[in-house]
Amino acid sequence: MKRNAKHSFPNRWFWIALLVPVGVLLSMTVQPLLALYGGERITLQTIPVDPKDLFYGDYVQLRLAIEEVDASLVEEDLAQKVEKDPDNDGFPVYVSLRRHGQTVVVTKVSEQKPQTSLYLKGKLFPFSQSLNDEGKKNYLIDYQLDRYYVEEGHGMELEKLSREGKVWADVKVKGGYGVLVDVKPAP
Image 1 (cartoon, rainbow, N blue to C red):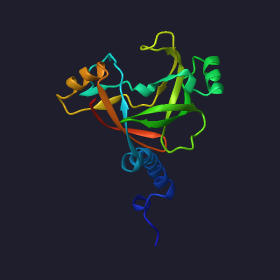
Image 2: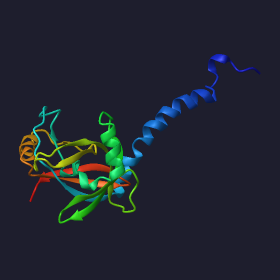
Image 3: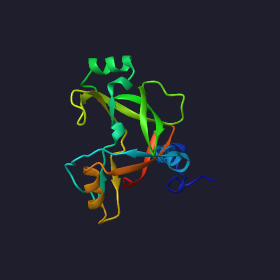
Image 4: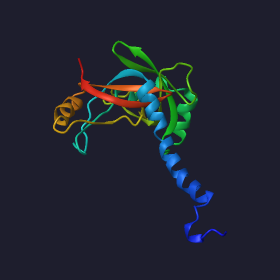
């Protein structure tokens, strides 16, 4: 007996074409979930920022103190690469961190994965003048941890504190990947 072509099951290519995009989307959630549920919790200081947009829904615009790194902490060969190509879209880097009181500080910026377990991945951009220390050479690092969504109606107070640099951010870190889990007034 022959199968009716109208009622046949889809072939294997149909299932592959269906499952590949679903697999790709699911794989994008693995690293954030590993950091969120198995990562080490650290607290980061913020520095004042005056955002262009106050709300996208309700969120707090953050600028982390570890985003502005003194040139002495960047490996020399990496600094030379950045200075030779200042129009680059950012150099992938590993930022080694060390606990310092209730927060963490940057100890080294490198292209090589550090031996320590406490580090973040980021993108390094050419140096700029520091807002705090005139004439001091700094590099900027983007960790993609600059926006935190809050319950509706609660963003304005945190936004005001953030502009004054009086907010701390709690981040879960695992394998260099960070997930922003809480924003709170600094003690």
